[in-house]
Figure 1 (cartoon, protein in one colour):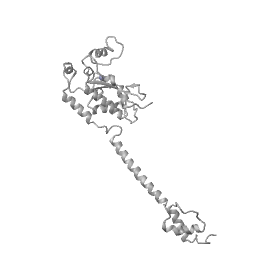
Figure 2 (spheres, helix red, strand yellow):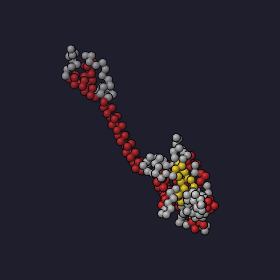
Figure 3 (tube, helix red, strand yellow):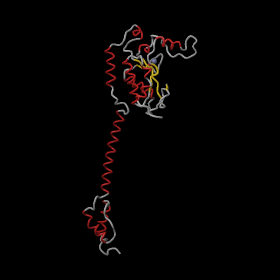
Figure 4 (cartoon, rainbow, N blue to C red):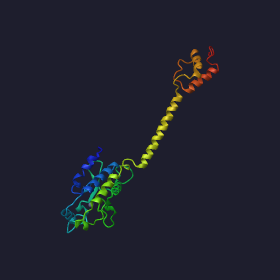
Length: 260
Ligand SMILES: [Zn+2]
C-alpha cells in the first residue's frame, strides 16, 4: 500500500471538475490539497450536470423506478447545473476504493475524516449539504453567493468582485493548520528544548566522569601508585577514580613497601 502523492490524488478528480465555474473548480482543488495535507484523501464524485443529466437523476426512484431516490432537484433546480456544486467522497488508502462512511478515521487523529473535510470546506467558504434541515446531503458542497437556483435559471451569476473575493480568501489561507496544528508545533518545540537540555547535561556528566588527563592534584598519587605496581595506567580515569587514588596515597598505601 503505497502513499499517493497530492498530484495522484488530484488526478482522480480531474474529470469531475470539468464544466465547473473556474473559481469554484479552484476552490475544490484547494480543498483536495488541504485535506491531503491533514492526511485525509478525497475524490470529487459529482460536479457539473446538464439539465438533462439532472432530470435523469431525478427520475431515479420515481414513476415506477425501483431504485432509491438520489435527488429532490429536477433539471435547473440544483446548483450542480450551474457549475457551483460538487460532491465529495473519501478515498481509501488502497488508492481506489471510494467511501461514504462518515465515521472513518484513516489518518488516526481521532477525528472522523468526513468532519475534517467539512471543516476545511467551510474554511474555504463552501456551504455543506449536511447542514440542510430537510434533505441532508452529506457529500454536497456548493457556493451560491446569495443566488437562488431561480436566480441562476434566470441567468444571474456571481459578480467578478464576488469571485475575486473568493480567490483572495483561498490564497490567504495558510497551511499552518496542515500537517501539524499550532498546538502540536508548540509541543514539538518544547520537546526539542528538553532534548537539547538533556543532551547538554549528558555531555557535562560524561566530561565530569572521564578526565581528559590526570588532574594536577592527583599526579603525585598516580606516580606513587604506579611505582608500587598497584596500577599500570592512570589515564582515562574518572574524577572519582583520581580522588580515590589520592586518598589511598595520603593514607600511605603507595609508600614503597607499604603493601605486603
Ligand atoms: Zn451534490
